[in-house]
Length: 114
Length: 110
Image (cartoon, rainbow over all chains, first blue to last red; front, side, top):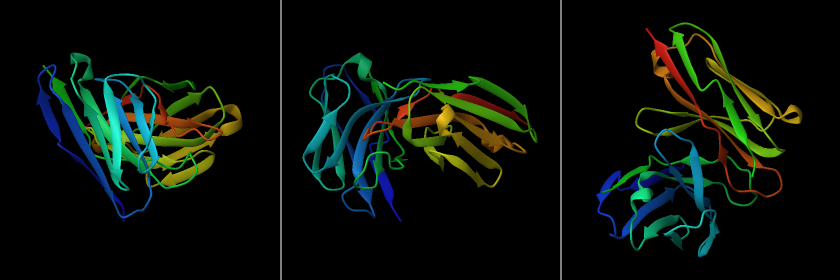
């Protein structure tokens, strides 16, 4: 069966510091991978998605970036965090190929920027 | 982008009661999912239901794609059903993005 891992689970960072969040998927090959962010008390917003190694599509312009160095690894980064980057970050995967497949979410990372 | 509206925003139930949550969407879709977000933030997949009807235990869902809405039914509610229920869709024609509604917060009282 497929599993998705995210780390760290929680993170407190000062404004202006760098960020690296990691997501890995097990039990599937060539998945579509996604980063979403959830602000407090609201729905999720797609930040990035990837349909293959090195292929990244950005949905929201901001100071975050994403990379996919390996088939089942997805990384969310920032060079300098802003207060507005605080939130709950969730990674998701879906089967390879066509869009519209069922998406499965990881446990998330709670980021607080002070 | 596609608009997703969920109602009601909040729902308070007595244990054992039945309820219906609604999701309206503004365009044709090729994916519709219902999730339950638990107190730890984990999004649990309830249904993948772009059309038709499905049942899983005390939960069932119906999507009428031609009329652009979906319903989630909770029967004989339990305290463990408490949490936020989200509806999310991807627009038809090769869209990867899940667009989420604002959610329905369900509180089940013993």
